[in-house]
Image (cartoon, rainbow, N blue to C red; front, top):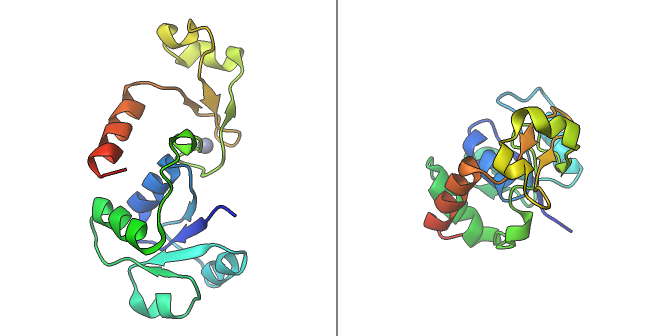
Length: 151
Ligand SMILES: [Zn+2]
């Protein structure tokens, strides 16, 4: 089964990059009492920079660095991260849910013409927030960044 994560409060950027790679990475900047326990109980692996917290949960991963590229390397070394590029950009970076094929009506207003006029436009939308995703310069930058980091 696909690994799902829950990232501790200090790991917002890491969770964003995990989402870029297609991982289900739950993150909040604040967790109410009991929320971490519940999500770990549902099968998520806790990622945290707090060693004391990590000790409390089976399968939790302690993250040492406070730089996101080193955090990704740590995770890769400790548990392996997917190199399956077909998974990249398949998830909303804000809502952490899988994207779906966007309707053409929704796309017309915000997607650049050169994307719309492709034979099979690769436009996806988030079923929660409605944000549209397509292969543009933003995605190219993130892909280059991941390549630079060795993914
Ligand atoms: Zn969304």
